[in-house]
Length: 112
Length: 116
Image 1 (tube, helix red, strand yellow):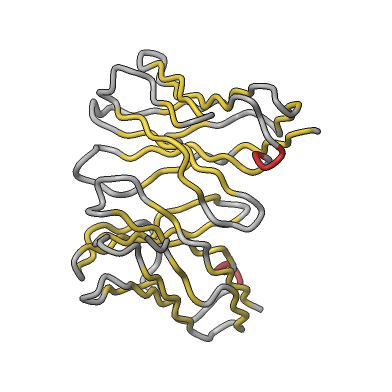
Image 2: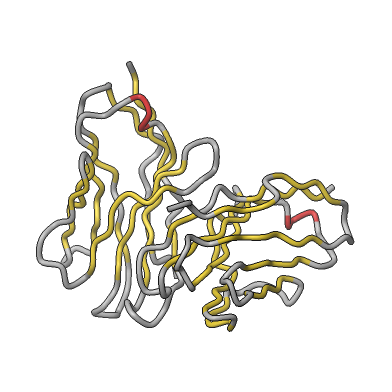
């Protein structure tokens, strides 16, 4: 089975812009979770989608949003980018959210 | 409150030797899951091993084993016969409670360097 894929792998944006990141889960997996990783805060949970519904949400401002499509692919959007949004964004998939989460390679976002 | 604690500074181990990476956790739930992930410099998080709170046996996966001491709330990762490719960051994570919540809480990670 192919693993979790994320696109793009690298992004450079400027403050105030918005960005959309994409994640394709392992075939058959219906749960997709998103995490932000920064040197200062470490790995933090953003949200989880299951069957096109947001099932769980972390403590992030409303500028961070996401969605999931009927084929389980997920996107996350960050609007009005701030310098502090520079991070590695990881998505993870699992069969139903209750099993092991498998991560993608991540998207490195740099906000200038 | 911090739920996963990984306090070891950068760890060094000689190739072919065993190494233990420490992890303590804090939860009031009886049902939870503990995970270890490896993150090489490329950034991808690689799943290594899982231990459920009700599992009576310590989990093992090839060269990885988890030393689970429930009363002490510790879940240490043991890597046997270290290889150069084991050099990476290692994260301990917890999911609580199992079956109802897919959120993983991660520790700060431990850097492991394997010397030839």
